[in-house]
Length: 446
Image (cartoon, rainbow, N blue to C red):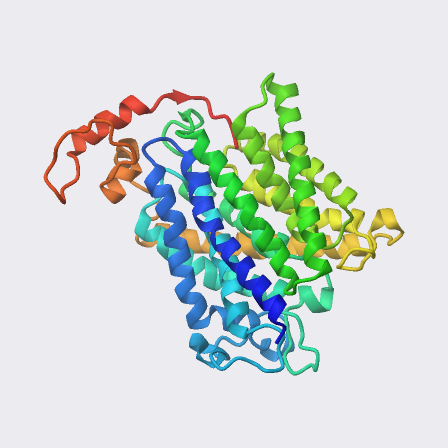
């Protein structure tokens, strides 16, 4: 066992775990004041559901021996319940239990990302059902394609994208961001637009958004750097490229805003940071520091323009999961084929370094395959739930506010009136307080 690398991945795991409250704060600050708690609960609820499934069979579906060697799905019973991981593996550099919990966080965060697209208008119970089904039927198979490599001795076969196609995806541009982004689009098409869209409440707390973005940036160093699975040069290079791309993306997004709207906004700067982090995720081990700056700049410039697509085509992606995660993930995945250099840890030259079109073609196949599979299966899951128990919140409940109707709570109690211990405020008082806090305005994107 490599003690140094074990310590590093332990720290990386804790950093990635901090992304859960980071995402909850980031999303929670971007919605209106009547939806903050629901947004936070959707993130944490998805984490809880997927975390349980990961222990029961998810880890096996992702990292178990591929059924028939086809590279499509791991053996769901191979590590059932994860009890076999307790004894460890004396031949492995890292404890298997540590790898399991590190990868569990990828699964839970990917699923939680979709929540931002359907803010304000889905029922909490059916959302939890959707999260579980989506993880089992979409994320686990796709993660097997991308993250499960064949064992050195050939005794365990992994996924087709990682091994047969040999596309480069260092930390999850396809399995995480393209997967969540296209899944978000599918479920948005099923649940429909919010009441009053495109006019919606302003973000209720921009400092909360900035705090969430900062926490996510911190956690992303563990997300990308930890994907090296060792403390060494590869992890160090990955952290450098992650930092570079994020900085470039912030500046690019702000420049687009300034030229287009006349203002460089806080929401835009924080959204730019996330766009850069998304784009560098698949490419962080494949490009040079200058290549990372280029990828971040491209993502920071294109993603804010992609927000306009939802108004042109009429899909209500509340917090721009499609524009940031789908578009940013595609950018980062494809640009590996352009800016990739054999001097980076991934060791493959892209178009600009004399590698030809081969790597770019592999990246396109990987991105397109994940998009097609995830969109179709997500659409079927969402339709099945909507047609049976109902995923969409009733219109009257949406108007009253999802925090109140789904959780019987409000985020901000500005009345300060005495109440019976254990009893919440009256619905009328909650609604009155919320109406004073909520101002309607054209959405700003983010």
